[in-house]
Amino acid sequence: MDWIRENKTLASILGVIIAGVLGLGYMLYNAWDAYVVKKDEYIALGARVASIKGMALAPTPENLQQKQAAVDEYGAKVNQLSTALLFLQPTPAPITDADFQKKLLERIKKIKEMADALKVRLPPDFGFGFSEYLGSLPKSDAIATELSGYLDGVEAIVKLAIASKVVSIDLLDRTKLPSENEGAPAPAAGKKSASKAAPKAAVAASRAISEKNTVSIVATLDQAALQTFMSRLANPADMKSESDPAKSHFTSIRLLRVENQARVGPPRSAANRIAPAQPEAAATPEAAPAPSSDKDKKTEPTGPVAIVPPAPAQPDSMPVIGQEKLKLQLEIDLVKFLSPQTASTGNAARP
Image (tube, rainbow, N blue to C red):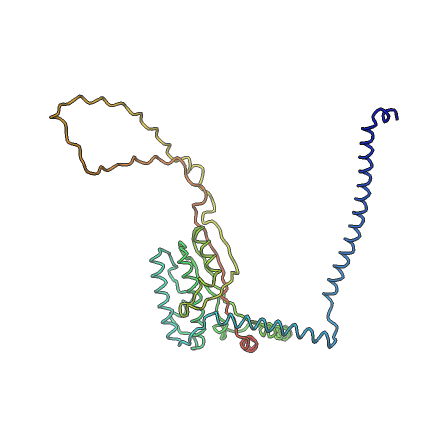
């Protein structure tokens, strides 16, 4: 008490600080208590909303009408988008089996000439993945027409890779069309499993709005070519159809894997083998020329004088990273959008 009487100012300040701390502590406690209550209410409300969303709709006429309206609206938007994409994608012109083989040979020759001009290596047996049709014809003209459109898409991808200045295309493969596998025997399955899988397959096929055919490519390239190839591959403007430049092929990346061609860096001994730079020889002063008479003076040339640059210095370092090539493994889906009639009827008939 005596200290408080002697230090009234300091005691007042300490009293205000203590009162403020107690007041702020009380407010903090109330705020934390309110936060805990609101948090519990929020978690309970979220669990309730999740349970309501997971519950099945009551089979009432009102719910059925609302659900049917939502499904019809969604289907109309999907059909509208599908119609727009159908207009933007190329439609292969009818072609005979013999003409398809001739087209394949011409396209292979053209691509090889393009690769030679840009110094891009191709596989020895390069055939766009259609090498089997170099010695045999497709089964029918309808299959040949479908293969012709598929060939156009694969060719657009290969042209884009070559134009991106890859070093080499090491492998090019494709998945077969369903029409090519129609004669293949179906895998054996039990009656019970087949009866259960058939309705599900029919429902999934009837809802399909597109077909996807996968093209696999393995290439050797550098960083700049990789960035160029990937950015242009995602742009439909760079995937123009050769037969109809106003339309484009649509692609999506299924798998992308990139790794260094040289997985191990150069050994330390390789860096140590670099010859050290030789010190420049000290310049020795030349003796001053003796004075000469006017008769001994020679006329200096008046024409241009060639300046010879000095020899480059010996290397004293070597690059360790950033100089190796890359190995690219890419699986690309060529997407073919179907008309609403084909999606609802044609695909449902497929196994």
